[in-house]
Image (cartoon, one colour):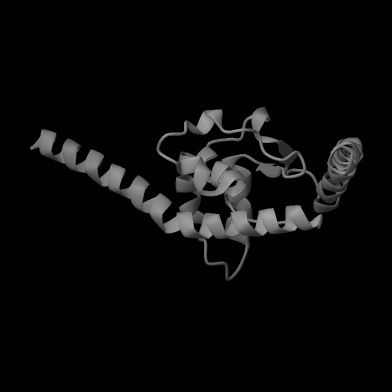
Length: 168
């Protein structure tokens, strides 16, 4: 009986992982389309979602290419430098305390453990700005604004080179 239970758990877990991606995939692709539209138009935009897994972030950046069967996700070209992730870093106890204190939110505090269990923290290669949530909202906003300005300064020479190459 133990082997059957163990096999059932593995099968169930595998089904949950596949089903989890299937339910999120259309939504992640839609967000990818929005990111690409805004990026191509030169607009500044902010999209908020919990992309807890590396694969989800890759889909946001690269669309369906990220899950193509013949492409290793770790060999996909890096994202456009103007697209970056904000990683809100906080420990379980602090986040749990904040969730318990809030009223009327659909995500209850008892769901937090599962979020921490599946979290794959972003790596430096994922173009991420880590924000410590112990800081005030104002401090974090200022850090994001500074990061955006520094990206714009870095991208300006690249865009001028691309335009000169295209025109020349």
